[in-house]
Amino acid sequence: MSDKIVCKNFDYFITSRCTLNCKLCSNYIPYIPHPFHTPKETAFREMKEFFQIWDYADRIELIGGEPLFHPDFFEILEESLKYESQFGKIRITTNGTIIPSEKIFSLIRETDKRIEFLVDDYGPQLSKNLSQIIAKCDEYDIPYRVDTYHGDSQYSNGWIYFGDCKTDLGYSDEKLAQVFHRCVVPKEHFVMVNNGKAFYCDYPMAMYQVTGNLPTNGGYIDLFDDSIPLEKKRDMARHLWEGPFSSCRYCTGFDIENAKRYPAAEQLPRRCVQEG
Figure 1 (cartoon, rainbow, N blue to C red):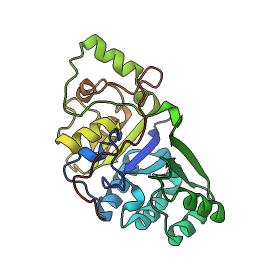
Figure 2 (cartoon, helix red, strand yellow; figure 1 turned 120 degrees about the vertical axis):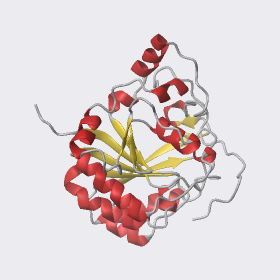
Figure 3 (spheres, rainbow, N blue to C red; figure 1 turned 120 degrees about the horizontal axis):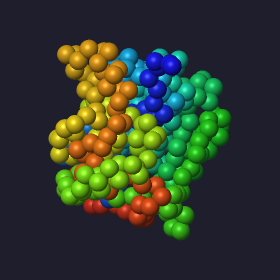
């Protein structure tokens, strides 16, 4: 039996700043009290620590917020390529508001299609640069996918509301186990990295950013805690998705078959201008 530790998706959360302000954002961007770009030095260390624990990720997903909003996006993308033997592909998830620089497109072209774009199309009023991004991808021969979320065309029938990150939903132990069993997250083996921590799911990651509270019974690894030996962290990674966890009590669950869906990208008023 292989001792390699593998995850399907390494969701690398590099910024909580965004060009949009979506009510049902799954990363809870509008509700984070102090949004910020992860300093590139922190991002580099997160990447290093992650790949010491996990031997391989099928895909690195650069997410936010809007990842292209990060002023050091190019350097973070370039750094990630140093681990090319430990991942399959990189995907950049963007909302179609920012056109990447020629420098970024040139770097991506050099990777022989190991980097691709996932462009969420929220309609011409929001995803204003969608057509230009697609044109640039075509020009540089870069693979991309467009998921449409406006009008009657809602990818996956829209978004899911998971909770407010603050309210215990009062599950019995039996109901909690049922919610966890139906959730797609533990089946897919995703890892979300932010603030020097690797989470089993983006909901506890969001809870931590919104409330400052961490799961009390596992479900995350402190990448920067040097008092934990590497082999201990690797063992924690092997069991990362063995829940349910305390944060699951606050979540409706990512039940792709039965969850109620809502129209995507409803915009909330800005509490402040999120500048780069």
